Image 1 (cartoon, one colour):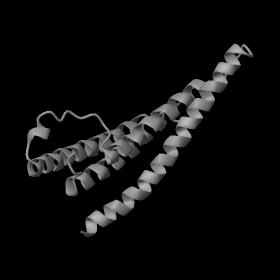
Image 2 (cartoon, rainbow, N blue to C red; image 1 turned 60 degrees about the horizontal axis):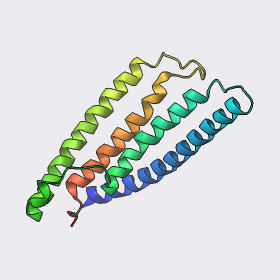
Image 3 (cartoon, one colour; image 1 turned 60 degrees about the vertical axis):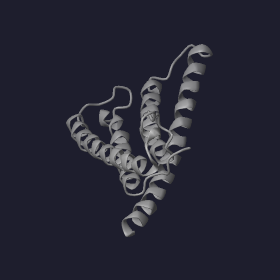
Length: 161
């Protein structure tokens, strides 16, 4: 199916970019927090911007990693009832829940754009950048997650044994 191939192509590139950004943001978070600890306990000073940068890196790390978990099927799920169903019904339930999840991610995507626009003029104190920087990864993560969920609705994962 052409849509499946297109989604697979787009998602492979998005996954690679997300993985790289997650690694970079996590590394930045560790570096900034480590530097702040050294500054406080060794030099008895602090970096004014460290708290904001580490929070931004944390938020970006979390929301960009969510679609990667969806792709791998590693998010927590309650499967007590679904595991007892025949394989065909399990696939149908997986498709339906993926489609509902994609719709929910579409709502999150659209709503977060509105919130980011509404808070655009608010500034972070130490960095003097828009506070909407916290909403950008939510927008990207919701869109990326929705694409993965649409893909799973079209081609569900095989049930785990």
